[in-house]
Length: 190
Image (cartoon, rainbow, N blue to C red; front, side):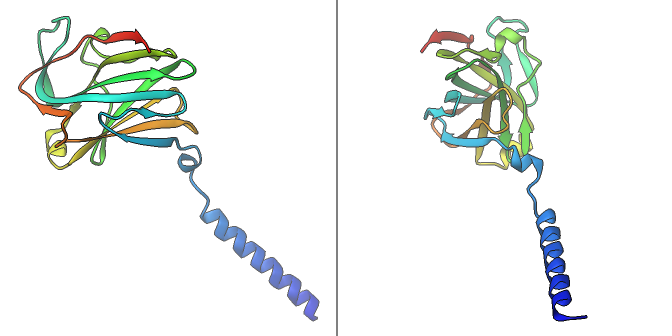
């Protein structure tokens, strides 16, 4: 075997080893198509590519009362976390998605309330939606955290902005009560 054959063989081995290393270190699909998180604090407006939101208050209570009075009150399986915010689409309509991150757990808004009792649905550009999102959270998880994170996005979050709003439990926007009466969702032009 001459030196040229040895050099070619060595070059092929290096290329195969580099390809194997690269293959095992490729990003996962969830990393490739991940949303672009835009972070903000409660009380401060957060703006992404097509969504803007401001958390104006958070109430934590074992009982909520819908604005319609039906049902007259609703007990939580855990504890209710009621986040009041103003949300708007910026340039195009989109279906609002909301999650509450509490420590390692993620919660979606409850479906135990009538649809007219909480905010959500399709957001239209330049129209502010003011309302409450209600989450049933395990109390032991809530006791172990210092802050909550509200995540909001319109439509498909892949390769688009997602708002992540930090809500410190010791902050001025958070209150604890025995009962929370939910505000009626309101709509206004911005």
